[in-house]
Image (cartoon, rainbow, N blue to C red; front, side):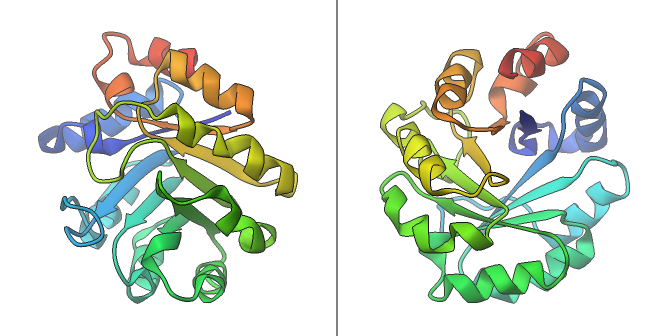
Length: 209
């Protein structure tokens, strides 16, 4: 089980401190939510912040691009230190080309689907993906309620997936919803508020396993 804490819930005035907190508590990856105010109604961070984060952690950077025209920015995020780049199915016109572009840099290629996007749309691309991210909230803001019907896409995807595909879930993840997702076949969980607002970050991460 790959646990990828989302820095969207960290204190950005103390980002290094908060990254070290989850790193020392046993996080596997660091989830970096990039939002542009167009594809989603929120603006977060960009390439310079990713480059700064890379300097202060050894955790793989799991960069989730919730942006329009992601193909314009992939190379810049790779150079900044992204180890995994996940784009949204709904944001691109040529999915295969984006996957090929990401993988050409020697990093993992991920694709995400929003709550209203059916699982079946990902089937033609699963063989080429390293990661498939199922959103269980509408992307854009942290702290939303978990949508169980979205999690029901997981077994549908798992049935068609190759054995090494990472099926990641993001949105409303806590100890209870993590159990639902893992029972369906997810093997990576993204959590923000549940981890960062916990009195015991290590215990929170362990509870997701």
